[in-house]
Length: 120
Image (cartoon, rainbow, N blue to C red; front, side, top):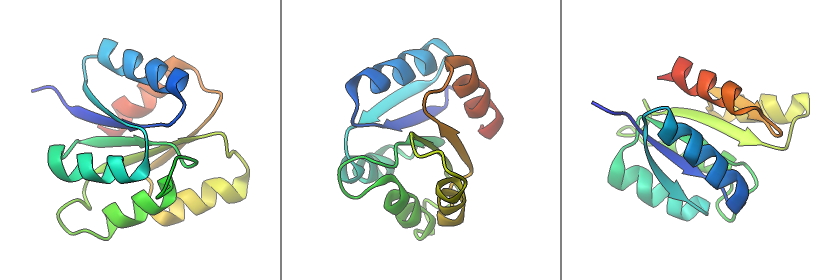
């Protein structure tokens, strides 16, 4: 069975890059352009993994992580933050919110594939 991955990103170019790479890797990909849309799709589709941008329209990626971790039915979902915020404090905040992994922009598609594979 093919794993479903949600990609939530408001930058269309990055969304296309991530989606294309993950589809090429064999995943079923659903996309969101805001935190609200991401939460709706998480509840509807129950993806195995969500790749979340921190700086997307409300709620932001960190709040999406918190809401998923706070929901007993969704808590086990794997979460990867993909963001331009690369300071050590940003990474720590993301992991403390409940993300399983953190990938900074710019990133290589090969690194993205490796992170997703490791999480799943």
